[in-house]
Amino acid sequence: MKDTLQKILEEARQSLQAVTDEKTLEELRVKYLGKKGVIKEFLGQLGSLEIEMRKELGRIANEVKDEVERLLEEAENRLKSLKREAKLKEGVVDISLPVKSFPVGYPHPLTLVTQKMVSIFQSMGYTVVEGPELEKEEYNFDMLNIPKHHPARDDHDSFYVIEGWLMRTHTSPVQIRTMLAKKPPIAVIVPGRCYRRDAVDATHSHTFHQMEGLVVGENISFADLKGTLLLWAKLMFGENTQIRLRPDYFPFTEPSAELAVTCPVCHGPGCPVCKHTGWVELMGCGMVEPTVLKNCGIDPSKYSGFAFGLGIERVAMTVYGVKDIRHFYENDIRLLEQFRA
Ligand code: FA5
Image (cartoon, rainbow, N blue to C red):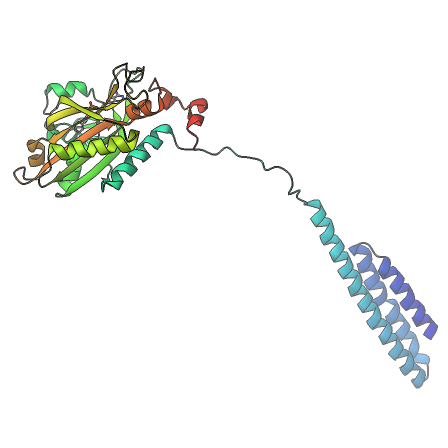
């Protein structure tokens, strides 16, 4: 009977070492260790034997049972690791393959110009402020000394939304908002979108961008305006840039001027960008009209200020030699890609 046990063990070892799937493994577990399995069946036959023999065979049968359990566990671990290896092979990644490149966006030329101007003015101590694009007529015109029926309103053909409210025609109403909210000293710049009912052509759009500047404090003079804008022009277009100021008219500044810079493209002799004059007109500016200060509760006998406002598209067209403003809004990838950093 000892031989029978040895045979059972030998058979179990061979079957369990050859097993390759979980189903057969489970069948073998039942066959050897189950309630009606071969070991249980063997033990059932010992009842008729004498006691010493029964004890001896019972001990050997338990050893065989322990060994079969160990062989089952070994087979189970082997199957698990085979399964894991197969899974790894399935999802194998070839890290030497070239990477799929996804198109990455980059700033629009108008954003690049705005960012450069903002950083120049921030380096001079200016703060960036913003205002709403849907603006009160009162701030866009009246408080800027442009009452109803003033001829200057003709230059700002406007999109009215409802009575008393319009899409702002310039960034100057943010001058009013700033001075109503804050007392001097003030030094702010205002980049933002503006709207006019202008016919669209190479230099005009119904929607465009401006940047306003406003400085208010004690003893602010026209010399401060001139020095600030000369420094801005040199930082923006290069050290050799010069500025030219010529008289102009804006109802909210007095005196008012139009600022031009030496052509950043040809640097003087003349080219299509400067229309062969050597100069490019870039902005309106002037000393803040005392009435405007008064409208905002600032005493003009104590404080004075200067303001300026420029078209961002105009600057971008000059800097990049873009001949038609519409190119900025068409988002033709062939144009935009030229501004990749
Ligand atoms: C003004 O808007 C004044 N608020 C500027 C100012 C501010 C003067 C502070 C004094 C003190 P003007 O209407 O000239 O000014 O517009 C300024 C610039 O905006 C123009 O030089 C031009 O570059 C740009 N601009 C005006 N209308 C359009 C348009 N339809 N399309 C594109 N750019 C425009």
